[in-house]
Length: 96
Image (tube, rainbow, N blue to C red; front, side, top):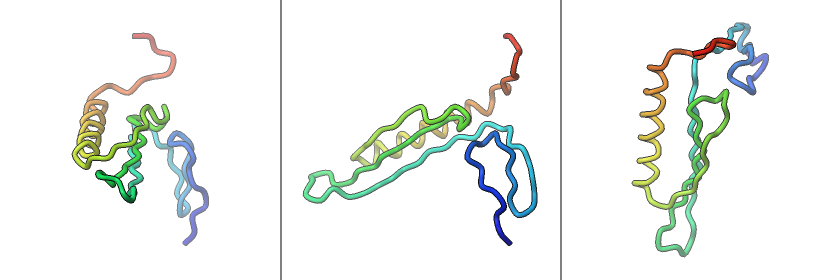
């Protein structure tokens, strides 16, 4: 099997392995890129990019050096994803 197309935005039509669907749910994304800074007293570096809704893009980017701080950011992001899941979906053109 081969992939026919790869989505660049979550709201695009997706065609993979011959199936087409429209992604309409909110989808969060958290990317962690970690490396070691040689010679540092705290050698861990973790660059984090955070989005609660990929349709809106990344809302935060930060670099941390303590594992506890990285874990706290992941925990906060997951809590936000859960919170967003309980909100009603936004509808285009509707006024509150």
